[in-house]
Image (tube, rainbow, N blue to C red; front, top):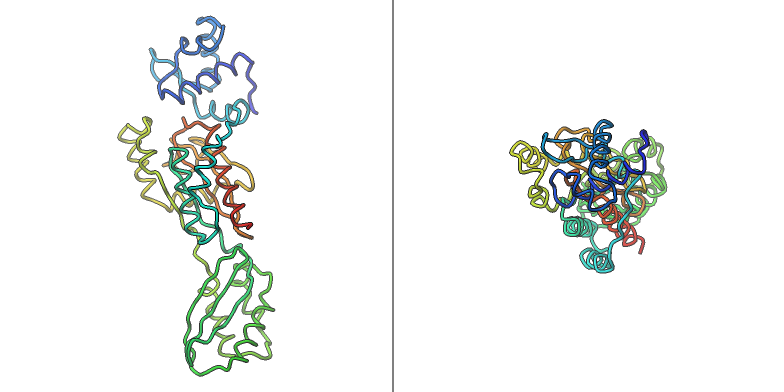
Length: 339
């Protein structure tokens, strides 16, 4: 932590943040005095010190204080205690998401709805980065004399099917041999590696059907691309209704943010959460439209690929609970796809 505070300063900063989260209004010395044995004069002096250090500010001369982004960062990194979810909340989440990993897209949509419902903020889920997924196998199925079905699987469990037309009837034995050659040469590669190197890997192939092999090489950028950067969004009304965004200019920025999914996708892709929770507060966000918001995200895994999920809300959000919500839902999704 860059700047250390005294125990007294920590206690008062903690009180200011907790009161501001609840009331969404500047916090005065009287409110803080109700929680501590310090005199109002002592509290006012400490508030002035915290203001001088940039942890709080006074929006108006006659008003109390509100936390700054720096104050929230200090609180998140060193003061707050994570608030565990109740048994009822955990059960709600489990019921919302379901217990069987049927369709990846449906599970992610339900997870987004759970994030929104439990947090009362904006839930966001970015689909896995399938380019990093590992190729599992390829199958060729004859549907008719001139129509084939191509079935491509990756380790996440996701399957892609494509129908293709061929100029002549290909014997079943040739189809099986072609599939075997492709599977041998593409084994354990990521989809990105296949797209970048399939031409080299399929050189000097003996056996299989030349027409089919040429097709896979020339059409790799279509065949081996799974839908990526798809975003689920839930709870737009939750964030618009926050008192911080009653100001016309601020609500305009929020609506513009919600209307531009590319920005949200870019923000989530910029977040390197690895296996941990990542919190980005206010002006720490690179995008101008996110400067009045905070983002709490975690990564989740489906097989060998990972995605990002989290909540977006005002900087005043209740971080101790939001962290637990995001972490629990990400863990539930991880577990669901381990089954």
